[in-house]
Image 1 (cartoon, helix red, strand yellow):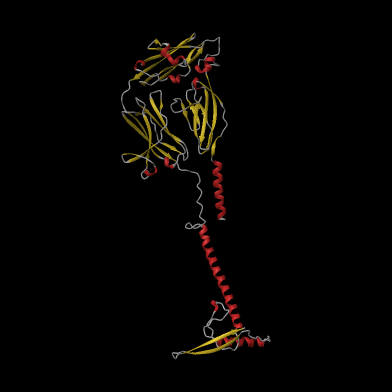
Image 2 (cartoon, rainbow, N blue to C red; image 1 turned 90 degrees about the vertical axis):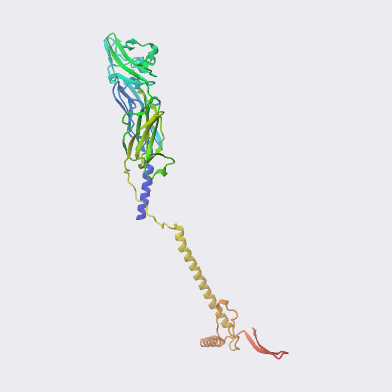
Amino acid sequence: MELIWIVFVLFDMVFVTDCARGPPRVSAKVAHRQAVRIGRTMKLQCPVEGDPPPLIMWTKDGRNIHSGWMRFRVLQNALRIKEVEADDAGTFICKATNGFGSVNINYTLIVIDDSSSGRDGAGAAGDAEYSTGLPGKLVRPRFTQPAKMRKRVIARPVGSSVRLKCTASGNPRPDIVWLKDSRPLTPEEVGEGRKKKWTLSLKNLTPEHSGKYTCHVSNRAGEINATYKVEVIQRTNSKPILTGTHPVNTTVDYGGTTSFQCKVRSDVKPVIQWLKRVEPGDENKYNSTIEVGDHHFVVLPTGEVWSRPDGSYLNKLLITRAKEEDAGMYICLGANTMGYSFRSAFLTVLPDNKPHFPPIPAVSSPGLPWPVIIGIPAGVVFILGTILLWFCQSKKHCSSGAMVSAQALPNGHRQPPRERPLPGADKDCMASMTYEEYLTQQQQQQQLLLAQGAPKVYPKIFTDIHTHTHSHVDGKVHQHQHIHYQC
């Protein structure tokens, strides 16, 4: 019964493991065409599952979406877009990958205006130039994304960039003019703004870019204005500064995926490096560690450092298939030629709640392999059997040899020399039988035969015993006896 249970446990482990693990798969139906109005928040779902848990990446029109995209946030199984703009229209792809394969979910995002029933050709190209769709009715201009225009005072360091937005709609389609300190900007100053009419992009800022920028939007029905104050700050030679609250303490399920973020402000592009503290006694598990004070740290692989529009730099540490060994303290280190700054956070990995099967009991001795255990007794039995068979064969041969010798000798001859082996007997079967004992045995056998009425048996061997005496010159006498056998 125990053997059957062990076989069942092994089968269940192999079968369940092989069936559960595999490439990611789509777990729910999705609508591949999505529509959203300007200024709203959109969430694109990515319902995928797999074992091991897949790593999810999003792309828009072939470009990877990362933490540097201000209004985009990659969630565990979705992509959230805040304050949707017309430029957000396009093709989005959610790609889920693990060690067994990958799967894609495609979306086509359509951005529409809340106050219009359509757009012209230029609007379809992404310029967001909307009309009311009512040719006979005049509609004064209005800003369609006021949430993006709340921050009117913007400070940027030298060499960074800034974008000023004034997206608007009306009927007829309004026009926009950009002014700096009440002076219209030239086409060369507007630059990229000529292509994206509602956005003024200023790159590689210098102190001369400081000032008040006003967007003047008007049509036949009216006009509106919005003013931004831009301050370009001279860079100072200082060490990096970690801004915001990241990295923060994080908890992740066993086998799950999580990440740490690090935002660094620096006059020049800094070096951002992630470190993990090595617990005491675990130093030998790593090829190399660095010692800081009383602690050892291991240097982790670092991904790409992204430059943000506000002049800061962002880096992200991704942890996939979290294990107990991944728990501990992590440090984000930002450094440049003037110094460094760092901030730490702790990762907690929850215990694995999957059932663990009991270990299979051993069926053989842990000291010796089973062929040796079986072979030793079998060898002993074989040797004992061989000895016993040889001993039996030897006894049988000894008995037959003695019988032949007894029948071959005559009855009534002179005594042969004592201790002389009998002819025809086996060397191993010879006994020290006296001549008187031999004659007595022969007489008993003849009497037994006569009593049974058996015919008389005459011996076939005749003996002649005589003695020779020799005299020597020196006076010595030598005497010896000869015994002759004749059939």
